Length: 280
Ligand code: ATP
Ligand code: MG
Image (cartoon, rainbow, N blue to C red; front, side, top):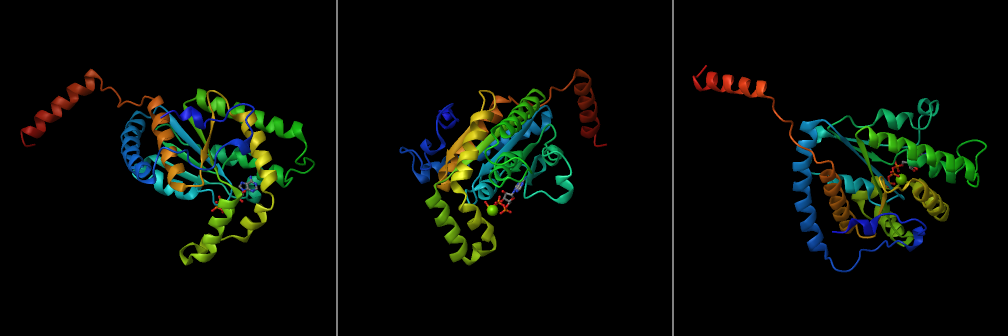
């Protein structure tokens, strides 16, 4: 599958990216492929974990109800939980606000061998923080300030990549109409009532500002090495399938291998085999 179609392209406006799946794949096919990809991911993760050479950092962003939580639930099922660390970033605490904005995310970076998942991330610091002017003295229009933050993020991710932590950046792209349908479901479905948050309705009023802030963030942080993937997400089954395709490809690119056993260790293994076979 040609995943480059879903990479952020320089100069292309966010509103021109599809939120609906392309034709040519049915829901049944996508679900079957997702199942296959889960097995592939598990096999690759096993080697990643054993090798302890690289870490994968999956960054999930999207408007409220875009499907971040459920993608974690449905796509990562089947991985060894011991090798996965999920962190959800909410509004920062007073203690977190006393630090630089990447402090809390840096503490949550995955160690080598693991897959780290950021459910929201330091990107919130050029999104919600920009839209609501949460840095005193720096409004939405203070281009220089936000451009500098994006540069800091770009540099940070380059540093991570060069040090074996590979960022994979996913944006769940939904339409405003689809968001309304999903928020209504949270009201109508008793099993989803707990997810309803009046704040989501308040944020929805800033839809255009968010789209603009996302656009700016993508423009300055999507690079050849560390691109943003913009997933058409109005159909959850499609976004999940696509995420699984991206994860398989990214894991393969790391070429994880089980550690090569030294001659000395092989001798030791033979020694203990002999002992065990003698019934000791
Ligand atoms: P859902 O998609 O189901 O609405 P969610 O990811 O929005 O889930 P919530 O617990 O509803 O989860 O909200 C987290 C909130 O924290 C978001 O509104 C997000 O914008 C906010 N947040 C995250 N990081 C920051 C930050 N650095 N500054 C201010 N707000 C932040
Ligand atoms: Mg929310």
